[in-house]
Length: 479
Image (cartoon, rainbow, N blue to C red; front, side, top):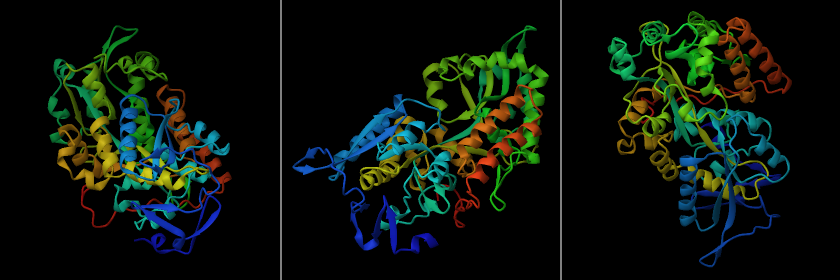
């Protein structure tokens, strides 16, 4: 255990001081007495027992929502103390927590919320989330999340050495391509064979050019767009080029470091060679908010390749079952470089002001534990981040198994910052101005840095503790 797991004495939970002797354990979950003593529950009665309600909010829909409802139903069937109700909130951008913020500050927040992990630190710094470390310790478990969860997910759920979330799932980025389009263009398919390792960015540009069909004013087909899909984030190319986005030692944002600038410059040069406005006209319909999967030029069989995540397998099966879609490593700047990708994902949190925080934590444990995670993988085709599930070969088809075996070891996470959502928005704005040829790469990235650093400094957040390190003995994410 780390130092935080050894400290004891008292904890503050919803304004009540708790000693560890004042904590009861039930079904492996810490029931923090008195945390909601003044709350009157309207509770269901099951087999003569009153069960305390747990309100669970999520913006998920379709298959994801169906899976979450099944997880809640399974929890309710085996838990004698708490009853979870799943409430679907209006869909929103992953960094938009306005609904949660308004509810928590108005005293009407949920007991559990499914939150994108990369903004956990920001919401924790804003005082919206309960510190889960006391709950974890009271349950007799290690609050160092790297023990149970892969490190990139554990890092995003940890802020200043405390766990504010438990990791739920992940999605890892790779280069996907339409095999037939490249074969028809006479491309050397060995470059796209993952068994041969990653190709370079320049090799990708060369083979993608062979697919371009241009009538002079419009593209009818394009090989690759460096900002479409998950290449729409500068994190994708920035990490691939070996760039870093935050200096923890000096508490300074670093989007303007030479590697990130080089990545952005490559993207701008690529776009300018094709015509920035013309290329954007080809892609913009699919890039608007609320665009349907069928608006994607890849689904329309007019785009040869794009960088995206494993969640797309479901769309491919649904909309283009006749297309043989291949996948390989994200490109590298020069031959011999390691391919570096990044992952995001969701997490379970207990908001401040929760009326049933102990029940909320009990459900978060179940949701992110082996039972909840396994069901979600099976129904939703996402990847788990729980180490014990990554070693289960029966859980994955060959596609997902490739992602686990080949991409997890080189996967990064976005920096864990109390201004993570602002940083994401500023980097998006900078990248857009770069690929639309409205700004020079370094100048745009310096603007993103300046704007976000101002918030970091004004909030008095420095120093920011670096995320937990990978266990020294770990050889692979499945170990």
